[in-house]
Image (tube, rainbow, N blue to C red; front, side, top):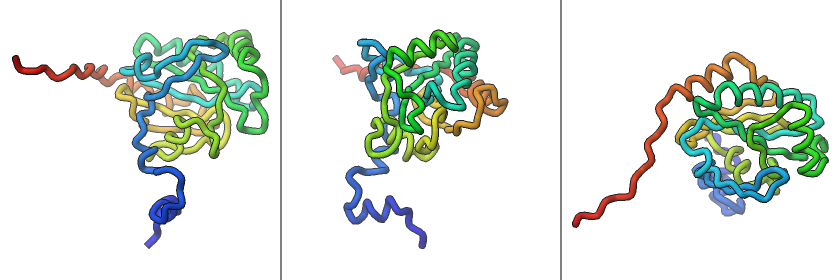
Length: 197
């Protein structure tokens, strides 16, 4: 019988956290600071009910040109409920070494990025921000192996698919998947239970 390594380590208490518990993490249950700003955004409150595309980004990468395609997707579909969220990281070959203000200026001046960008953070390894740890162990996820990994969440905030760096934002299958999720109805907010008089 072939047992996954993480499961064997977990059963012997050798992992510092529960991988299944991480896989069940509410992926919109985080509060993050905006890039080069002071505003803290509650992802669930701001983006619940939307189709969310999360991308780890870098300013000096061979895939940096994908900012243009990501912005085009955002502009084309934002009124239908798509939001693109960018997470700058310097984790891969020192390809985003600048300050948050420098990264923000680069994205705006070079690619006219208007989609939300968040604080620079780690996306892999022990220092990875908890959101990216959860994406790495989710059944539909994977740890990013490079910049511009893409994670697509449905309107309920569930991760449905992830793609690597080589999938361009204009890829037909990628866009088709986004359109399928946008066609799904917006979930109705759950109301608090009513107490009988």
